[in-house]
Image (cartoon, rainbow, N blue to C red; front, top):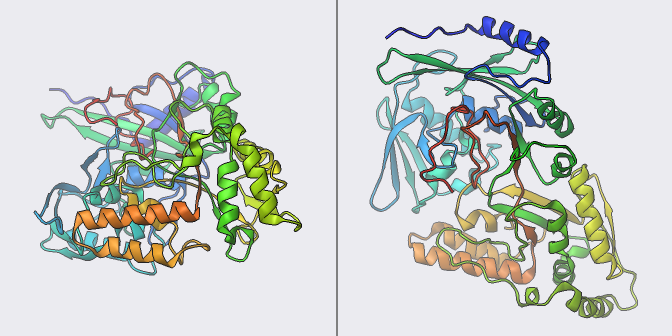
Length: 496
């Protein structure tokens, strides 16, 4: 079979420039070539042991520096550096066999290198933001040049979900292992040119995928999509969703990920008014979640009054507190009386809230000011975490484990915490018995909700703009998106 011609990098850059000159209002149709914009700064291939990746960095890491495993478009696990793996019957040992591959900077990838990089990501000095979620790792050992073992102190059925996150992508000497190879784009749009070759099953037919990847502000990214200058916009959150809503988007362009995680408010300092659990409970009950979500208008997004959400591994669905059964309008008189009893003749506080600058943050600030203003409590925005009484948490869960939700509020991480919760979380981490672990996590969740260490609002919001020619895109619960196969129709098997 004849081999299909392949564009060189330089020729591809020239072609992109010619297409740009042909008119920005026309959607590109070059087969296998896609323009992708991430909301945020220009993505960098960072070493996550040395730097916390931004949302844009995470997209590049997932596509140019895969870990042992990675996510497919539906958020399911597929091979990365490891071509296959086995799990011991007791769940304490994961053995990975590496594919025969090379670093993009040159040199064969060995199990010794991979083990060393993983150990570095898990050290106390590592900046990896989700290293705590994989805290039961006892050893990472290279058994041969192509086989390594991860040994655990306690079983974790969600280990592969964590290893597939871009925080555990492997970067060595500034290079990853693919599936895309990045280089500076010589075309007019700048950014990065990501390229990969796909060899057919007969090892003769070769096709090439090419992505032009850029970071941009939300407004610029949306405008580029409206003008037909980009095929895919990634990285949208609640904060910039109102910008997308104001534009005349094509039907089905705006797509939401059904992500799990935390979206709500937590005390920002231990010496402020939020150190009082009675005030925290009062504030949580006074938030009009229905009104806020109605303004955001995200299909399927429901208000939440518990730290945990439904569908987490090993635990029954959380039970909403009793007060949620009474409509907010009916319970407001009692909340006002409770505020009068709590403060008495004292002046009521002005709460400083750390929120992102943007229309979504402004919307949330306005909602809180209205809801808490009825209690005589004023709200103002603060630009500094140091002076914040409340801080917005807007984070997607990296796995289906309930432990991630709860450990976010342990002492040493959260300024307002509870020692008894910490004891439960430590016990849950160390036990070898899954039923005991789940019972301890359930007790910790109940205690966190009882003390109102977190003021939940809903699940996080993650959205994308997707052109009709991007057939390989799918939403998933982790909000992670591979750029491979964007022109391919995805299999729906295993989709969330």
